[in-house]
Length: 357
Image (cartoon, rainbow, N blue to C red; front, side, top):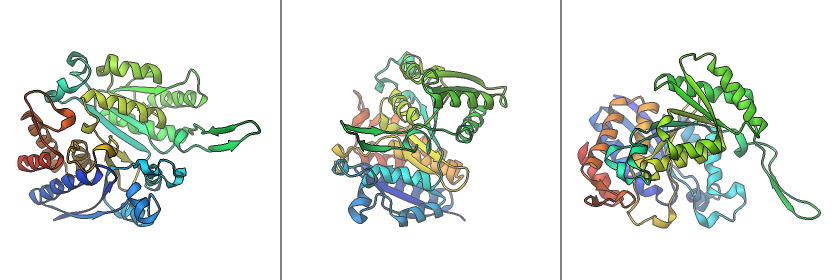
Protein backbone atom coordinates (compact mmCIF):
# COMPACT_ATOMS: atom_id res chain seq x y z
CA UNK A 1 0.00 0.00 0.00
CA UNK A 2 1.22 3.49 -0.88
CA UNK A 3 2.12 5.56 2.18
CA UNK A 4 2.26 9.32 2.54
CA UNK A 5 3.19 11.52 5.46
CA UNK A 6 1.36 14.84 5.59
CA UNK A 7 1.32 17.77 7.98
CA UNK A 8 -1.83 19.73 8.76
CA UNK A 9 -1.38 23.31 9.93
CA UNK A 10 -4.76 24.51 11.25
CA UNK A 11 -3.41 27.91 12.28
CA UNK A 12 -5.83 30.61 13.41
CA UNK A 13 -9.42 31.82 13.16
CA UNK A 14 -11.53 29.49 11.03
CA UNK A 15 -8.47 27.33 10.38
CA UNK A 16 -9.28 24.52 12.86
CA UNK A 17 -12.86 24.26 11.53
CA UNK A 18 -11.94 23.86 7.88
CA UNK A 19 -8.99 21.62 8.76
CA UNK A 20 -11.37 19.26 10.57
CA UNK A 21 -13.48 18.93 7.42
CA UNK A 22 -10.45 18.40 5.17
CA UNK A 23 -9.03 15.72 7.46
CA UNK A 24 -12.22 13.66 7.38
CA UNK A 25 -12.30 13.78 3.59
CA UNK A 26 -8.62 12.87 3.23
CA UNK A 27 -9.08 9.88 5.54
CA UNK A 28 -12.07 8.71 3.51
CA UNK A 29 -10.17 9.08 0.24
CA UNK A 30 -7.16 7.16 1.55
CA UNK A 31 -9.42 4.25 2.46
CA UNK A 32 -11.28 4.34 -0.83
CA UNK A 33 -8.24 4.67 -3.10
CA UNK A 34 -5.92 2.30 -1.28
CA UNK A 35 -3.23 4.53 0.17
CA UNK A 36 -2.27 5.24 3.74
CA UNK A 37 -1.91 8.68 5.30
CA UNK A 38 0.19 9.43 8.35
CA UNK A 39 -1.20 12.76 9.56
CA UNK A 40 0.42 15.13 12.04
CA UNK A 41 -0.92 18.51 13.16
CA UNK A 42 1.48 21.30 14.08
CA UNK A 43 1.35 24.91 15.24
CA UNK A 44 1.87 28.01 13.12
CA UNK A 45 0.89 31.66 13.29
CA UNK A 46 -1.08 33.09 16.19
CA UNK A 47 -1.78 29.70 17.73
CA UNK A 48 1.96 29.02 17.80
CA UNK A 49 2.62 32.43 19.35
CA UNK A 50 0.14 31.69 22.11
CA UNK A 51 1.65 28.28 22.85
CA UNK A 52 5.36 28.91 22.31
CA UNK A 53 5.96 32.63 21.75
CA UNK A 54 7.19 31.82 18.23
CA UNK A 55 5.00 32.03 15.06
CA UNK A 56 6.93 29.11 13.54
CA UNK A 57 8.39 26.67 16.08
CA UNK A 58 11.35 24.54 15.02
CA UNK A 59 9.24 21.42 15.54
CA UNK A 60 6.85 22.63 12.85
CA UNK A 61 9.69 23.38 10.44
CA UNK A 62 11.22 19.92 10.94
CA UNK A 63 7.88 18.15 10.48
CA UNK A 64 7.06 20.09 7.30
CA UNK A 65 10.47 19.37 5.77
CA UNK A 66 10.09 15.64 6.51
CA UNK A 67 6.59 15.37 5.03
CA UNK A 68 5.30 14.52 1.56
CA UNK A 69 2.88 17.44 1.63
CA UNK A 70 1.79 20.26 3.92
CA UNK A 71 -1.78 21.57 4.12
CA UNK A 72 -2.19 24.98 5.77
CA UNK A 73 -5.59 26.42 6.68
CA UNK A 74 -5.11 30.08 7.66
CA UNK A 75 -3.01 32.36 9.82
CA UNK A 76 -3.70 35.73 11.39
CA UNK A 77 -4.97 37.06 14.70
CA UNK A 78 -5.68 40.77 15.34
CA UNK A 79 -4.48 40.47 18.94
CA UNK A 80 -0.92 40.32 17.62
CA UNK A 81 -1.18 43.29 15.22
CA UNK A 82 0.85 45.54 17.50
CA UNK A 83 3.64 42.98 17.98
CA UNK A 84 7.07 43.51 16.43
CA UNK A 85 7.16 42.17 12.87
CA UNK A 86 9.01 38.98 13.82
CA UNK A 87 6.38 38.20 16.46
CA UNK A 88 3.36 38.41 14.19
CA UNK A 89 1.52 35.36 12.78
CA UNK A 90 2.32 36.29 9.17
CA UNK A 91 6.05 36.12 9.85
CA UNK A 92 5.65 32.42 10.54
CA UNK A 93 4.20 31.82 7.09
CA UNK A 94 6.85 33.90 5.34
CA UNK A 95 9.58 31.99 7.14
CA UNK A 96 8.02 28.61 6.34
CA UNK A 97 7.98 29.46 2.64
CA UNK A 98 11.63 30.42 2.89
CA UNK A 99 12.61 27.33 4.92
CA UNK A 100 10.94 25.04 2.35
CA UNK A 101 12.40 27.10 -0.55
CA UNK A 102 8.95 27.54 -2.08
CA UNK A 103 9.61 30.00 -4.85
CA UNK A 104 6.37 29.59 -6.80
CA UNK A 105 2.75 30.12 -5.80
CA UNK A 106 0.09 28.78 -8.16
CA UNK A 107 -3.45 30.10 -7.80
CA UNK A 108 -5.96 28.65 -10.27
CA UNK A 109 -9.12 30.65 -10.91
CA UNK A 110 -11.87 28.80 -12.75
CA UNK A 111 -15.50 29.83 -12.68
CA UNK A 112 -17.88 27.09 -11.55
CA UNK A 113 -20.96 27.28 -13.74
CA UNK A 114 -23.35 26.56 -10.86
CA UNK A 115 -21.94 29.60 -9.03
CA UNK A 116 -21.78 31.99 -11.96
CA UNK A 117 -24.52 34.20 -10.52
CA UNK A 118 -22.58 34.54 -7.25
CA UNK A 119 -19.99 36.78 -8.85
CA UNK A 120 -20.36 40.54 -8.58
CA UNK A 121 -19.53 40.71 -12.31
CA UNK A 122 -21.94 40.00 -15.15
CA UNK A 123 -22.13 36.36 -16.21
CA UNK A 124 -21.14 37.16 -19.80
CA UNK A 125 -17.87 38.63 -18.52
CA UNK A 126 -16.82 35.70 -16.32
CA UNK A 127 -18.44 32.65 -17.95
CA UNK A 128 -15.24 31.57 -19.75
CA UNK A 129 -12.71 32.42 -17.04
CA UNK A 130 -10.04 29.73 -16.56
CA UNK A 131 -6.72 31.27 -15.57
CA UNK A 132 -3.86 30.64 -13.19
CA UNK A 133 -1.71 33.20 -11.39
CA UNK A 134 1.95 32.22 -11.12
CA UNK A 135 3.45 34.37 -8.38
CA UNK A 136 7.11 34.49 -7.36
CA UNK A 137 7.03 33.82 -3.64
CA UNK A 138 10.33 34.26 -1.82
CA UNK A 139 11.83 37.34 -3.46
CA UNK A 140 10.76 40.89 -4.18
CA UNK A 141 9.81 43.56 -1.71
CA UNK A 142 8.69 41.16 1.03
CA UNK A 143 12.21 39.78 1.42
CA UNK A 144 14.44 42.50 -0.02
CA UNK A 145 17.16 44.14 2.05
CA UNK A 146 17.62 46.72 3.43
CA UNK A 147 14.33 47.30 5.17
CA UNK A 148 13.26 48.90 8.43
CA UNK A 149 12.29 52.04 10.28
CA UNK A 150 14.66 54.81 11.29
CA UNK A 151 14.51 58.08 13.16
CA UNK A 152 15.75 61.14 11.27
CA UNK A 153 16.32 64.57 12.83
CA UNK A 154 12.83 65.66 11.80
CA UNK A 155 10.67 62.52 11.57
CA UNK A 156 10.49 58.74 11.39
CA UNK A 157 11.00 56.98 8.06
CA UNK A 158 10.21 53.43 6.93
CA UNK A 159 11.59 51.64 3.88
CA UNK A 160 11.49 48.34 1.99
CA UNK A 161 13.53 47.24 -0.99
CA UNK A 162 12.07 45.59 -4.09
CA UNK A 163 14.81 43.46 -5.60
CA UNK A 164 15.06 40.53 -8.01
CA UNK A 165 18.05 38.76 -9.51
CA UNK A 166 18.04 37.35 -13.02
CA UNK A 167 18.19 33.79 -11.65
CA UNK A 168 15.11 34.36 -9.46
CA UNK A 169 13.16 35.70 -12.43
CA UNK A 170 14.35 32.88 -14.69
CA UNK A 171 13.28 30.26 -12.15
CA UNK A 172 9.69 31.43 -11.86
CA UNK A 173 9.44 32.23 -15.57
CA UNK A 174 10.54 28.74 -16.57
CA UNK A 175 7.84 27.20 -14.39
CA UNK A 176 5.21 29.52 -15.88
CA UNK A 177 6.24 28.71 -19.45
CA UNK A 178 6.15 24.97 -18.79
CA UNK A 179 2.71 25.34 -17.23
CA UNK A 180 1.49 27.36 -20.20
CA UNK A 181 2.56 24.56 -22.54
CA UNK A 182 -0.02 22.31 -20.85
CA UNK A 183 -2.75 24.96 -21.08
CA UNK A 184 -3.71 27.43 -23.82
CA UNK A 185 -0.11 28.52 -24.47
CA UNK A 186 -0.61 32.13 -23.42
CA UNK A 187 1.38 34.09 -20.84
CA UNK A 188 0.78 37.62 -19.67
CA UNK A 189 3.70 38.91 -17.61
CA UNK A 190 2.75 41.69 -15.20
CA UNK A 191 5.23 44.36 -14.09
CA UNK A 192 5.73 48.10 -13.73
CA UNK A 193 8.58 48.44 -16.21
CA UNK A 194 7.66 52.03 -17.09
CA UNK A 195 8.69 53.13 -13.58
CA UNK A 196 10.72 50.44 -11.78
CA UNK A 197 14.23 49.26 -12.69
CA UNK A 198 13.50 45.90 -11.11
CA UNK A 199 10.50 45.49 -13.44
CA UNK A 200 12.63 46.38 -16.45
CA UNK A 201 14.95 43.49 -15.56
CA UNK A 202 11.87 41.28 -15.02
CA UNK A 203 10.55 42.05 -18.52
CA UNK A 204 13.96 41.53 -20.14
CA UNK A 205 14.37 38.09 -18.53
CA UNK A 206 10.83 36.99 -19.42
CA UNK A 207 11.45 37.96 -23.04
CA UNK A 208 14.70 36.01 -22.98
CA UNK A 209 12.90 32.94 -21.61
CA UNK A 210 10.25 33.34 -24.31
CA UNK A 211 12.89 32.76 -26.98
CA UNK A 212 13.01 29.13 -25.80
CA UNK A 213 9.23 28.69 -26.09
CA UNK A 214 8.26 29.79 -29.58
CA UNK A 215 4.77 28.28 -29.30
CA UNK A 216 3.85 30.50 -26.36
CA UNK A 217 2.10 33.80 -27.00
CA UNK A 218 3.71 36.29 -24.60
CA UNK A 219 2.28 39.67 -23.69
CA UNK A 220 3.19 42.22 -21.02
CA UNK A 221 0.92 44.46 -18.97
CA UNK A 222 1.64 47.06 -16.34
CA UNK A 223 0.14 46.03 -13.02
CA UNK A 224 -2.41 48.86 -12.94
CA UNK A 225 -3.70 47.89 -16.38
CA UNK A 226 -3.73 44.19 -15.44
CA UNK A 227 -5.87 45.00 -12.40
CA UNK A 228 -8.34 46.79 -14.65
CA UNK A 229 -8.34 44.05 -17.29
CA UNK A 230 -9.11 41.38 -14.67
CA UNK A 231 -12.52 42.95 -14.13
CA UNK A 232 -12.99 44.22 -17.68
CA UNK A 233 -12.14 41.08 -19.69
CA UNK A 234 -10.75 38.32 -17.44
CA UNK A 235 -11.18 35.57 -20.03
CA UNK A 236 -8.27 37.05 -22.03
CA UNK A 237 -5.85 35.58 -19.47
CA UNK A 238 -4.46 32.06 -19.31
CA UNK A 239 -1.23 32.20 -17.27
CA UNK A 240 -0.56 35.41 -15.34
CA UNK A 241 3.12 35.60 -14.38
CA UNK A 242 4.22 38.18 -11.84
CA UNK A 243 6.36 39.03 -8.83
CA UNK A 244 5.58 38.70 -5.16
CA UNK A 245 3.85 42.00 -4.35
CA UNK A 246 1.85 42.32 -7.58
CA UNK A 247 0.91 38.63 -7.45
CA UNK A 248 -0.33 38.95 -3.89
CA UNK A 249 -2.75 41.71 -4.90
CA UNK A 250 -3.84 40.42 -8.31
CA UNK A 251 -4.50 36.87 -7.14
CA UNK A 252 -6.93 38.12 -4.48
CA UNK A 253 -8.67 40.29 -7.05
CA UNK A 254 -8.89 37.32 -9.42
CA UNK A 255 -10.32 35.21 -6.60
CA UNK A 256 -13.42 37.38 -6.45
CA UNK A 257 -14.26 36.57 -10.07
CA UNK A 258 -15.64 33.29 -8.76
CA UNK A 259 -18.01 35.01 -6.33
CA UNK A 260 -16.14 34.22 -3.12
CA UNK A 261 -12.54 34.14 -1.99
CA UNK A 262 -13.65 31.09 -0.01
CA UNK A 263 -13.58 29.02 -3.21
CA UNK A 264 -9.96 29.18 -4.30
CA UNK A 265 -6.99 26.94 -3.47
CA UNK A 266 -3.29 27.46 -4.03
CA UNK A 267 -0.05 25.52 -4.18
CA UNK A 268 3.40 26.78 -3.20
CA UNK A 269 6.18 24.75 -4.77
CA UNK A 270 9.95 24.51 -4.80
CA UNK A 271 12.38 22.68 -7.06
CA UNK A 272 12.52 19.79 -4.60
CA UNK A 273 10.95 18.72 -1.33
CA UNK A 274 7.34 19.00 -0.15
CA UNK A 275 4.99 21.75 -1.19
CA UNK A 276 2.64 23.88 0.86
CA UNK A 277 -1.03 23.87 -0.11
CA UNK A 278 -3.41 26.47 1.28
CA UNK A 279 -6.64 28.35 0.58
CA UNK A 280 -6.30 31.89 -0.71
CA UNK A 281 -8.50 33.37 2.01
CA UNK A 282 -7.42 34.54 5.44
CA UNK A 283 -8.28 33.46 8.97
CA UNK A 284 -11.59 35.40 9.15
CA UNK A 285 -11.51 35.87 12.95
CA UNK A 286 -14.91 37.61 12.86
CA UNK A 287 -16.67 34.31 12.02
CA UNK A 288 -14.34 31.88 13.78
CA UNK A 289 -16.05 29.25 15.91
CA UNK A 290 -19.50 29.91 14.44
CA UNK A 291 -19.56 26.96 12.00
CA UNK A 292 -20.35 29.27 9.07
CA UNK A 293 -16.98 29.21 7.26
CA UNK A 294 -16.75 27.98 3.69
CA UNK A 295 -14.34 25.00 3.66
CA UNK A 296 -14.26 24.55 -0.13
CA UNK A 297 -10.99 26.41 -0.75
CA UNK A 298 -9.34 24.24 1.91
CA UNK A 299 -10.82 21.11 0.36
CA UNK A 300 -9.65 22.06 -3.13
CA UNK A 301 -6.21 22.82 -1.67
CA UNK A 302 -6.25 19.27 -0.31
CA UNK A 303 -7.09 18.10 -3.83
CA UNK A 304 -4.07 20.00 -5.18
CA UNK A 305 -1.91 18.35 -2.53
CA UNK A 306 -3.22 14.93 -3.50
CA UNK A 307 -2.53 15.52 -7.19
CA UNK A 308 0.71 17.51 -7.17
CA UNK A 309 2.31 16.53 -3.89
CA UNK A 310 1.22 12.92 -3.40
CA UNK A 311 0.55 11.93 -7.05
CA UNK A 312 -2.82 10.52 -6.02
CA UNK A 313 -4.54 11.88 -9.11
CA UNK A 314 -7.62 9.65 -8.97
CA UNK A 315 -8.39 10.68 -5.39
CA UNK A 316 -7.84 14.36 -6.25
CA UNK A 317 -10.27 14.23 -9.17
CA UNK A 318 -12.84 12.44 -7.01
CA UNK A 319 -12.63 15.21 -4.41
CA UNK A 320 -13.03 17.93 -7.02
CA UNK A 321 -16.00 16.07 -8.52
CA UNK A 322 -17.63 15.82 -5.08
CA UNK A 323 -17.38 19.60 -4.68
CA UNK A 324 -18.99 20.14 -8.09
CA UNK A 325 -21.76 17.66 -7.31
CA UNK A 326 -22.66 19.29 -3.99
CA UNK A 327 -22.72 22.77 -5.51
CA UNK A 328 -24.87 21.58 -8.42
CA UNK A 329 -27.40 20.33 -5.84
CA UNK A 330 -27.78 23.91 -4.64
CA UNK A 331 -25.99 23.45 -1.34
CA UNK A 332 -24.21 26.60 -0.19
CA UNK A 333 -22.41 28.18 2.74
CA UNK A 334 -23.43 31.69 3.80
CA UNK A 335 -20.90 33.48 1.57
CA UNK A 336 -22.32 31.78 -1.53
CA UNK A 337 -26.00 31.75 -0.60
CA UNK A 338 -28.49 32.34 -3.41
CA UNK A 339 -32.26 32.27 -3.66
CA UNK A 340 -33.55 28.72 -3.97
CA UNK A 341 -30.43 27.15 -2.45
CA UNK A 342 -29.92 25.37 0.87
CA UNK A 343 -27.57 26.98 3.37
CA UNK A 344 -25.37 24.72 5.47
CA UNK A 345 -22.62 25.30 7.97
CA UNK A 346 -19.00 24.28 7.61
CA UNK A 347 -19.31 20.85 9.22
CA UNK A 348 -22.60 19.99 7.49
CA UNK A 349 -21.14 20.85 4.10
CA UNK A 350 -18.27 18.53 4.91
CA UNK A 351 -20.77 15.77 5.66
CA UNK A 352 -22.43 16.34 2.28
CA UNK A 353 -19.07 16.04 0.55
CA UNK A 354 -18.32 12.88 2.51
CA UNK A 355 -21.62 11.38 1.33
CA UNK A 356 -20.81 12.36 -2.26
CA UNK A 357 -17.54 10.44 -2.08
